[in-house]
Length: 388
Ligand SMILES: Cc1cc2nc3c(=O)[nH]c(=O)nc-3n(C[C@H](O)[C@H](O)[C@H](O)COP(=O)(O)OP(=O)(O)OC[C@H]3O[C@@H](n4cnc5c(N)ncnc54)[C@H](O)[C@@H]3O)c2cc1C
Image (cartoon, rainbow, N blue to C red):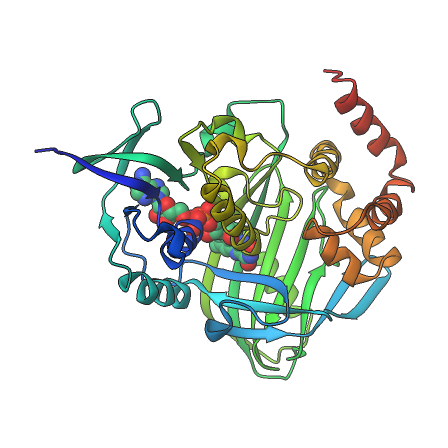
């Protein structure tokens, strides 16, 4: 039997990264102390379903649960290696299990927040209504982090790549990892006409998360990722190794206008809201920033569809993805050019959408004004003049 209609000021659909962070920001702020909040999540979030990494300057909100952090990194491309310091950033790793329990501890102290474990069946923004398998709820404003891949698959206006990866935590006999340094991107693996690299996050000289990652159109059979990880491990003098844990995932890389599906009272958040950086897949720190901006937006009582509009970084990503979608084999060369010609500090600032115009011009010209010029000019003119 369906019960009806609890009414709330805010309903948050999905209690993953963006839902939990948004719920805590609302409840932490005195401005919203009289607002009722409902958080609906279908799963019990108590497993380590993902590992989040991000770079951050100085102290951060989640430092208490940072599992590991690094100050140095390495980029490797064809005939090119760059060892760099992340300074002024630190590269941090959080395990999702620790994050969920940290957030739950916080959320339990908020009396204005109710959490239910139910599966959402339908969100109806016209009726300000959320239907679950057990109830129907009404709300003044609805935030949804429920991502539907169909939405982006059923269109051709924006290219869609997938960042897909398979990672293994391995323990080796020999000291073969540099414990204080991550392999940010190692393109010295067979590219097979795509964009493929290895990403290594060492916990010690003998233990690391080794991920085989692609930015490409289609997923691989599971055994192929594992074979590639084994190939990589055989190339680095491990002396033998054990695989302790496995993790796989996929993140959409697209400039699709998720924000066009927002209404005055419904806002899509997280990956479902287009908060994932299209050219890299990084999302976690963007969720932190966007939820802060959203709190300010809510205080101004403006319609939700006025939040989150596109900017010049969206356009840069669009051109980059157009090129990478049409000529996926260019990826290793594009990233190599970027690291060859620019200070990593500026690159990370650029990838955070915080660089200035001159810094952007330098970075873009480093990979666009090269043998890749034709591909960029063609993508640029097609977008500007809407050819095709
Ligand atoms: C394996 C993996 C590793 C990643 N690593 C990184 C990283 O290192 N750095 C980085 O910046 N980003 C990373 N990302 C990308 C991004 O940060 C994460 O996907 C992040 O969890 C996105 O947050 P979100 O709130 O949008 O989605 P989620 O965290 O997935 O939250 C959505 C929630 O909605 C719930 N839900 C879905 N459907 C329903 C329904 N019908 N009813 C009720 N609840 C529902 C889900 O159970 C889930 O809890 C990674 C992604 C994956 C998949």
